[in-house]
Length: 476
Image 1 (cartoon, rainbow, N blue to C red):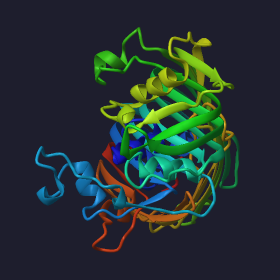
Image 2: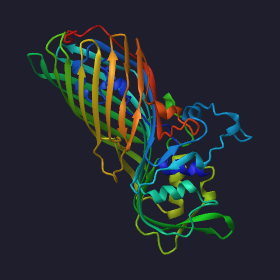
Image 3: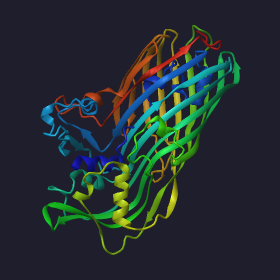
Image 4: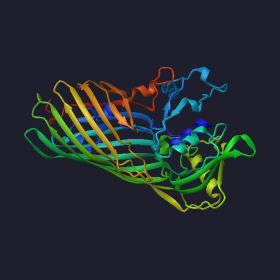
């Protein structure tokens, strides 16, 4: 139960993580359509006449609240290969709260689970000065932003023995958002100015969005205390005495698996549009000269409007609302958690609204890329979240990454180093022909209590994507 509560506190979702940025691919000169998610203007400097993305998938988890220190690695956990001695008789994993260690520094906490699939996509150089691309993508995200340490600590400890009894906690905050949606994007990039080995390019991507699942709890102020359960001295009760929050959720994916039929269903509850805008400057005098590329972009403008229930809470009355440990047993996912909260606070109440808006993870992206003629290069990427903490929206976690690389037309290797969520991650990406595999957080996959590596997340990606021909604009 404690493990379920911890996951619920971090993301209010059972979705797989998150993607994130696939730095080994998106910073590569041969990244093709995968570069456009950082800056659509990069399409105009593609070194291939045609680029095809067959499939690219990514799973990402990161937080700054707990470190993982179980006796088995996260790689074993997600692959289902945990040793039998750590399992219960029924085969389930006996995951204890002691397998995570809190990082308490008095600062608000963030957690992100982000899963992404980039489907069939194509980029075509329409002329030496321009390019056109069509992209498809599916994203499933669960996220907590700006959460108070006291709330997460109370949830992590659970409502059993060892719960922090009797100490009131006031003015706690937490913004939790989930969103699962697909997008179809159309990108055009062209050269604005050109001369003496220098180019200034601009690109834009227009997106049509189809949403399947969304929940949010935007909590601006929560007062609570934990007391002993009078019916069970080994259990506790969470009493909520004040809450200033908005709660909304959809139910379309409840008891429904993600499938092609689901993805194209006309009854999906979310619709929306999005936009990416970017500029790129390239300086490369000839094929024997180093190449410098600068990028500036604003991505994921827009959002989705979902059909779903939304409630606003400002006064819960004089009687505290109580949550027991039994309330959280057998919850099946984010919809069950949202409904539990709603039923406890307002049983029988009609929703304040029957629709709500969920924003995209809007970010400001700055890039600097320097490449030598022999294939060695260095990329610096800075992604800045521009959404407010209380926004009903997914957030692009702010990060700064430095990615050294070596690449040729058929082989490449990159080592992304990133500062994310007040921590440093190290990754590795390899491409052989059309096959990519990598991680932006290799140590996160391998860490456990035995080897002393205490990761705060994991990241893994791979797929098949390749270019055909060489652009006339390429100076190689």
